[in-house]
Image (cartoon, rainbow, N blue to C red):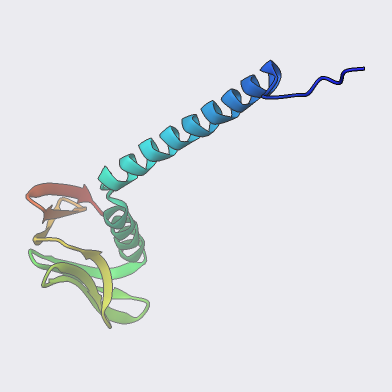
Amino acid sequence: MKQSTKNGFTLIEALLALLITSIVSLLCVVFLQTALYIVGFEPLHQEQMAILQLRQILACSQDIQVEPSKLRMIYQHDEIRIEQDKDRLVKRDGYEILMEGVDHIHFEKENENIYIFWTKQDHRFQMQIY
């Protein structure tokens, strides 16, 4: 009797290999699109965290004094200042950096509300902090 030899792949094996290749290719494309989105995305997470910290500090503070270039207050029995130092917004009872890369920071008090205005990379932002 003559035995048949198997040379090559069956149709099922070829289709399975094609399916696996297409799934891997699709995952690579999705990964690359996500990576490109992340590289081009500049979120304002640092600014959002700074605003939240400022709101918490001001909510727990007493004797808040607003000057155009700084805030002064009594926070947990210590006098602290929030002011700009070079390109940073810092909390001075030490040197806690709240925001970096800012060009200019300005504070205003209107009625009972306190606002912060800042410029970063030629974009102007404003937010109510108290």
